[in-house]
Length: 390
Image (cartoon, rainbow, N blue to C red; front, side, top):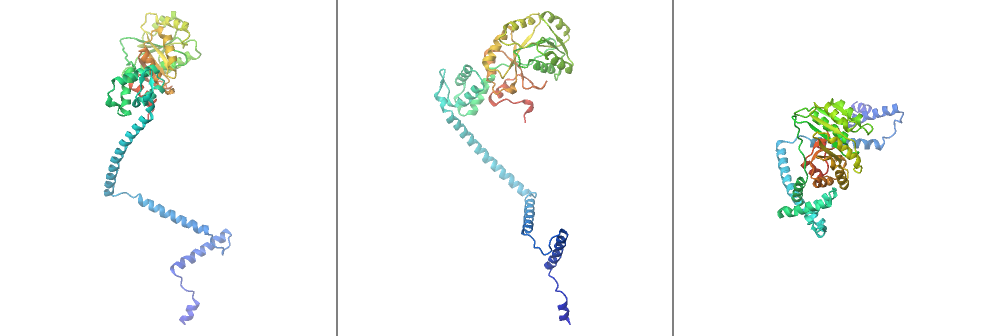
């Protein structure tokens, strides 16, 4: 009887076989819904996709295990290993620096055989010499500085390019003059900005007005006097700045009205005078401008120059405006120039101090009190904006 029952009853499926039977039935139902033949075989791509998913899962698990927190003992070992690697890297860096210096000496050996106006340029000075020359510095000035360096620099400091550059930096610092910003409430300060066209006098004047009226420790009463009635929009631009900063502005049509308008600004601690830009070749207009400085007032005359102007033209401009008795220099467009050598040459030649530097178009932020260190850094390392450094 049992044998008959076993023959009639279907055999019990194995555990895996039961799952396969249920899965096969499910697949058949899905195929039926999709309109696919129930007996069609499973495509190999489906099997391959399953294998890929399995591999991705295994990889993800393995990565997660790798990212598990380390034990304290492992962290200590890691720190020791990093310390040892750091010491090794420091040693390697020192050796690389020595190799780099030797390569520079080899690359610049040609300079040891070249004489410039009787001046022998040693190969250890070749890099700094070429850097200064490419910056636009006048050759005679550069040779003079180099001669001074050769005479004063100790022999031990010539061992590598770092010490040479450091010494040359000090020489450049002493080459130029920068004037400290000194304001005294007990004495009225009158500043007249003069210079050629297109150097940014009006924008620089607006920056100065904003700076003086919003000093950190003291707020000076500032007034603006404009002599630039020829350029279209010049007066409107200054009026807009003055209105925004809530400071007084007066317009002078001729030299006879100068004293009258100055009296209107008598209450001001600082009076800034904007002038019409003139070509350095128009001596007649520059001479007429001098009439405004001969009215009994003590006026500080600042010559505004663009750093993008080559040295020879800077010299012509300075000589043309010299009858106005220049007291200081203001350089603009530092952010638009790649070389600072022309600035050094002009200051070295004229012996006039630099008072301010314009480093952009933003009013009033892009204005700096001139600094020897900053200018030397720009000369040797390239221009940097102090307010925008990372």
